[in-house]
Amino acid sequence: MKVVLLGATGMVGQGVLRECLLDPEVEKVVAIGRNATAQGHEKLQEIVHNDLSDLSAIEGRLSGYDACFFCLGVSAVGMKEEAYRRITYDLTISVARSLAKLNPTMTFVYVSGAGTDATERGRIMWARVKGKTENALLQMPFKAVYLLRPGYIQPLYGIRAKTKWYGALYWMMGPLYPVWKLLFPKYVTTTECVGRAMLYVAKRGAPEPVLGNQDINRVCLDRS
Image (tube, rainbow, N blue to C red; front, side, top):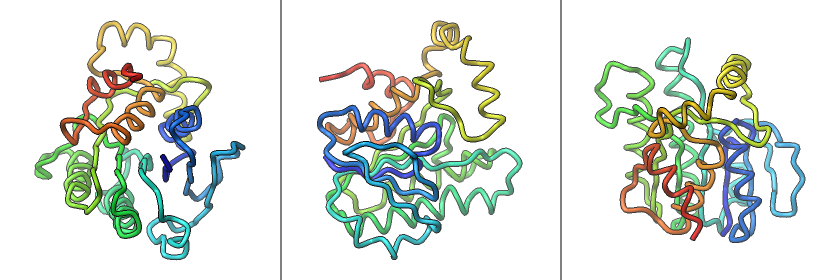
């Protein structure tokens, strides 16, 4: 399997990249981002591209892929809806359109979030925008689209969040993760499980396009 990965330098993307490089069924990973990952691996090819909302300059390098793992995202804290929509909806859909045109047999896997509002009419801004993005992706002419809605994600294997206040939060929460996992297993997962779940649905599919936190943890444990 050949994979396109967006968001490889973020916390979730780092975990997904790690699982891709470990998976013997993944032949190649092309990571597209504004910055390089600084990782060296024979499977990994990196494309540094400043304007991710317009991939026309690099489209010649993006055909022949089986899956896209889309892990780009920002926190909505302190953002106006227009700015958040520009990153969360406009950029995602622009990338998806380019990849669907070049790879009609591709499976597109998108990291969304628990609480996403598929009706697009709720009071919570980020949930509405995420819902709008999910709904638009489901209409794209891919082989399949899967939407992952994790809850709290615990970074593993030295992975760190790029945002400082997120990093501080995980530094404080990390030692308590075993407790959260024991008390709230439906609402917590790990970067490892998100990566494994993305690979699982790309290779084997799933009964429904939306995978909640419990679904992510379930397929994470299925190593068949």
